Each structure stands twice: as structure tokens, then as C-alpha cells.
Image 1: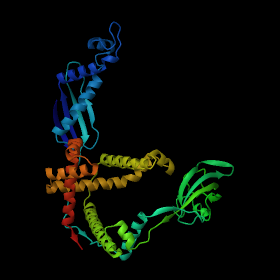
Image 2: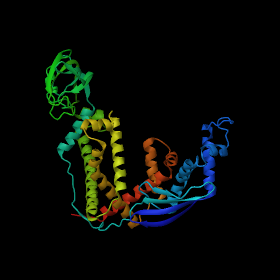
Image 3: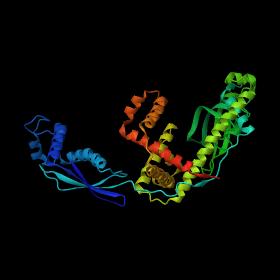
Image 4: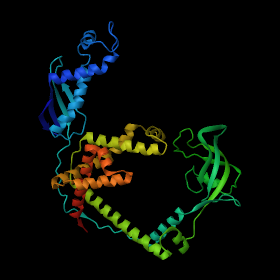
Amino acid sequence: MKSTLVSKENNIAKFTMEITAEEFENAVISVYKEQKGRFAIDGFRKGKAPRSIIEKRYGEGIFFEDAINNLFAEHYPVAVKELELDIIDRPVADFSEIKKGEGFTVTIEVACYPEVEVKDYKGVEISKIELEVTDADVDTAIQNMARRNSRMVTVEDRPAQDGDMVLIDYEGWVGDNQFEGGTAERYPLKLGSGTFIPGFEEQLVGVSTGENKDVVVTFPEDYHEDSLAGAEAVFKCKVHEIKYEDVPEIDDEFVKDVSEFDTLDELKADERRKLEEENKKNAENAMRNSAIEKVYEANDIEVPDAMVETEIDSMMNEFDQQLRSQGMDLEGYFKYLGQDADEFRGQLKEDALKRVKTRMIVSAIAAQEGFEASDEEIDNEVETMAKAYGMEADVVKGMLGEENLKMIAGDIKNRKAIDCIFDNAVIK
């Protein structure tokens, strides 16, 4: 196979692939060997008919389409690599006349990554950000630590209070009809959490274990289920259990139980130090983002639609995975919101455009500055991944393959570009 670049204008590359007669014949033979088992022809056992007999019965081009597809799948990536094309979309291919025993030419047009030159990325002015750690911040951190070490205690001698966790059965009725999705058994509900319909949780305050309670609520007018929007409903509830959160007292004894320190003052000092380190990182990240935003605003770059659409696909797939981890999927989500995929894609477009343009700018700066990723830097990244998965680095590196290692190298170069923007920024 010979590949030849014809032209490259306006981010569209046009090139040819010349497939020899021998390559085409070998591809046809391979398809024949793979598919001959599905042909039943009189006088031959199934799968034993010669190629010439099959071609005589079904036409000499019976195996052409699959052979051409196989050749394209094999040679197209090779041609793209040889011609050093950074493609961003599916190719459009035009084939010359296909004849038995002859080669053919494929003419291909494909969108490529645009050439980008970034200006004014050094010396951008950004405001200094400092995040103070207050005594209240430290107290909140200690209180959260206490809550993480709390335990749930069953209530025996009083009715439910705001903040309690109740275990309930409930059935939802509108008039004489029990509606779908309004039933549960032994459902854990924290009173005051605001997770149920307004007015529901408040009516369970004062109910004791084993007691039944009819909770009367009105669904909001904008409720996602049209049949229930604005409707008055009765939930027949039974309280099985009441629990409260027993938070340990914050004192020196608590400190000794949950940390390596002996006194509350020591723990507070350590928490302050951690919060100050975290705030310093957050402040620097915010200033980095501000610097990148300034460069973004200073550069008017045309972003190919194909790159934006690919980014939207990626965002939708990522969101779908998040939904599935919560027991839902995109189809159910669209039904809940009363919209379709096209509307959702439209909502993502602006964010996708910004993401793609930002990456293009950062990658272009990396190229303009000549940043590279050393073998040692790539190995360090792989080592970090290996530790996270509890695997050997060599095994992870082998699993990643050439393309993923190339992506890791790209990420390293992009981080250097972001460092370049920030290190050269003027902080006021």
C-alpha cells in the first residue's frame, strides 16, 4: 500500500491509498476462507465449495465488500501515521472502480486538528488570592471529625424528634388510588433533611415507635410526574424504629481516641495547619485558572464542530456512568426532566466548546514552547497509577499501550504549559 498526500487546506486533508492487485487478492482469499462455511452448494459438502464455484453462483464480487473493509481498516491507520495527520473526525472515502485481479485507489478526505498559534500567554495580570483559616473553620473540622466517630442509638423512651433517623413503611394514595412509586418498606429517613415532599417529614415529628400515621401533603405544581403535580396525597406510614446520632463530646479524651495527639489544643493546631495547606493549594489553583481564563479570552480560535461534538459525546457518557452508579440512566433522566437527547446536547455545547478551546490553547503553548515529556516523567505517572490500583508498574505500562502512553505524555506537556502561563503571570 502506498499513501500520498494530495492537499491539506482549511484543516481538511486529502490523500490517496493505492492498494495493489496482490493485496486485494490476498484480502479476498482471506474473506473466502472465513466465510466459505456459510455456503451450501449442491454437489459439495457445506463449507467445501471452491471459491470459483461460489463466485460463479453469487457473482465474482461476493467477497469484495468485506475484503475492501478489511483492507481499509488495516491500511488507513498506517497511512494516517505515515502522513503525520492528527485527525479529529471520521474519514470520507471514495473508491476507484473495483475489478477482480486489479488494484484500486482510495481517495480520502478527513478533518484534521487545526494549526493553532497562541498569543499573549506570558505576562497576563491576575489578582492575588489568599484564603484565611478562621477559628470557626477549625471548629467545624473538629466537629465533622466527631460526627464521623458518632454512632446511631435506638430510641426507646420518646417519640421522634427533628434530626432523628426513622425507619418507616409508607403507601401513597391520591383519593382511592394508590399511585405507582409511592410505596416503600423499612425506608430510612432523616427528619429535617428535606429529602421528601415539603411537609412530609415535619408530620412524623412526635410519632413513636410502632405507631401509624397518615401524612397529608400536596405535591408541588412543578412535580416531575404530571399526574401528581399539585395533587393532595395521603401517605399511610408506620414507624418501625427511631434512632438518633450520638456524637462524642469533644475533649482531650476524644482527641486521644481519634488521633495521635493528647490534647484538644494540639489537634486544633494540626487541623489549622492542614487547612492552611489546603487553602494555599486551592488559592494557587484558583489563580492558575484565572490566568488560563485570561489567555482564553485573549485568543480567538476557531474550534472544529467535530471536536465539540466529540466532547459532548464524552460528557454525556461520563454523566451516564454517574447516573448508573446511582441506579438511573440517561433515558430515565430525560424522562424525569421531560426533555430529549438533542436538548441535553444543546445545553452541554457551550461548556464543551470552552473545554475544547482551552485544551487547544494549552496544547499549542506546549508545542510553541517545545515542552517534552521525558521517559522518567512518564514512568513516574505510570508508577502513581500502579500504586493506586495495587499493581506492578511494568504490568500497568504494558496494559496501557502506545496510544494511552502518548496521552499521558500529552498531559505532562500540557501541565508544563499551564505552569508556564502561571509562572509568567503578573500577580497583583
